[in-house]
Length: 489
Image (tube, rainbow, N blue to C red):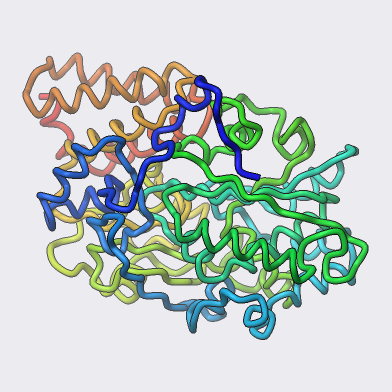
């Protein structure tokens, strides 16, 4: 099943529709900070319609749909978890996947049953890798506790944070790991149906998923008797049509249902009332890719990795300004300086101005704070976040004025329009900074308006788009105030 989104009010929400992206120029964050490397291509990206905000090729930025290069992939953690197969070579065939450790976790879950499976995930202390960092075991237990005739599991493959591309390569190179993780989640919570919501910007990954799902059904990994057991589970694919907002789970659920995918207030949470008002577990691809390893090796062994509050490993997507851009699996607790200098090899050229982790809806970290360990609480303490794990290096070619304009222009374009601070505030800040380039506003009034809008975004937004924009703006004020001040002179 693939949703058609045929109603005009639904179809109009999406930016890309059926657009041909094979020659698209990327407008994403990594491409923005690398625009000086190919100015002509950047001009093409800014003039194309519709705009495309991330093609998942941040390692080759500025990127286009024609780029076929693959990123460097390395494991820098003590133990390979998420990248354990693809660091050597892709595992795109089910037989190869099974020979290399696949399906052991699902067989273990089938053997020990739902409650002990939930216990292993609890013990692992796995937290979501899509941005919110919510405890996975807690989310699953909430869904498992619901009494309902149907329950669902959804893999959020709408990897919309410009700067991150880990989910793209997990799906392209290790698709059965995602299927196995979804099956374990379904067994644990009592679901019999799953969906994968995929980005249309990743056509190769979508094609691989279609084939993998067909192979999984043909081999008995999906269907009425999963791996010969009494457990029934199947997965359908839904392909989006271009919307950053659909990465938010209430918007994603509405999109799968064929409704206009605007964000909805919570509670109720999707684990209680999600797809068609049924309990629904929504996890992103990387989160689910951790699950087979946890069941295979045990939650306690997983919890021994990382640091308190941030267990396990994290895959980071380094952008093209690094000397060694690519995908790297690292231990939580690794200092940011190690990520920049040892993992990424420092910058290819220029001077590091800031580090931006977790996409455009997060704080920028100045070089003076690179001794901070990679961790959920540790980054939050300095006004930043782990997010999806995109790691964007900024150099001297990116002015703060231009960066603020870019981020709020992105936010205005991608806003679902449901809440006033996001719908109107993002546009207004983008206007202020565009006007700033022309000195076309009164500085004192503009600063007051900027501060008021940022406060409204922080406290009155419905979802992480607005609050994340506020987090970004606050970090700019906090760490780059001297460069920001002339914008309001």
